Length: 414
Image (cartoon, rainbow, N blue to C red; front, side, top):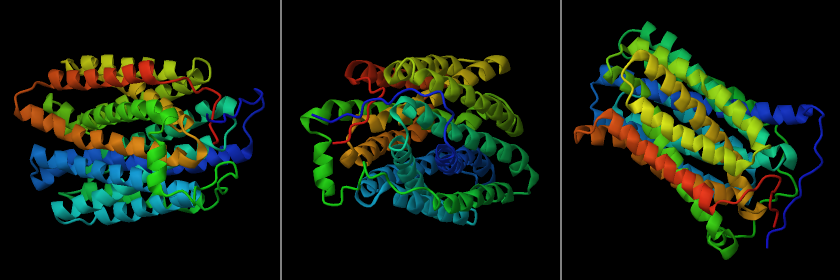
């Protein structure tokens, strides 16, 4: 039976400066990670024109990124339970920053894909470890809200990526635009690395499990008391990541396929991305009032409905409307996912549990970017493909509703 930390007394006092620093410092790294993923979606469209890539090659660029994220999430999640969350923060961000900067100088598709793999490793390792680290340092009564706000930095990164893509990529000749964009995306990560050195060490209540082998930690995920949560989280992560990377990495290309010019597509994606922020903020407000399960299920169902409508939209107005709703609900669900996942495991296996779930999810991220070009080659219309994504998201919502438990105010420590 897991010992559970009861929720502390609700206080109306504003967050302390240390909590603000924790949120902002962790969030900056999150923002730069999102900027890289966002830039990839825009760069795919630019690379198609500059390098003459096929749809299959474009899909593999996105897929190799997710392969790296799957490896990174599992490997660094296990490492964080052994050597500590803060150390893994620094390692993953350094890996991401170096590989991202080098990718601006890639001269062949093979070199770019190798670097995208290492970028993915850094991203995949950092995100679940960051949410675990923050959740362990925030009082129970506001933990969900703070972790969702941490995830909201992802929207800021996408907005910056869209701005860079809109103002930078078209301003340079031939293939220089996307290279400059990648350099801009890598430089701030070095600054975030400096800031992360100022983060406090792991709390004594969440010590690294130095004496517990990774095989034992993996086995504990399937112990009777954790099996239900593990199944639920693996299904949830897979469906969310599969649909997210399948839809959002291809948004600019889908817009072009519907007849919009490249620049106009960047503008539309920027406007749709702005809708992510209210999605996060409403989820942050609801998650401590209505609970994790309610927010996850409702926002996932909203994502499914918006995906269906977006795939079948055929005018500028409806594309923009349903694209904005898709961003609103999907990223709100992501915030709740990162808040919910660490609360399902005790301290010794928490980062391992979240990392493994995220790693399984990244397998969906490998398949998602390959789905559109493959099904498109089989004659599937855009509406049918987005209908598949919508159905996948419904499966994730059902997993939470049926198998998940409400963890509001809880954080198992043993």
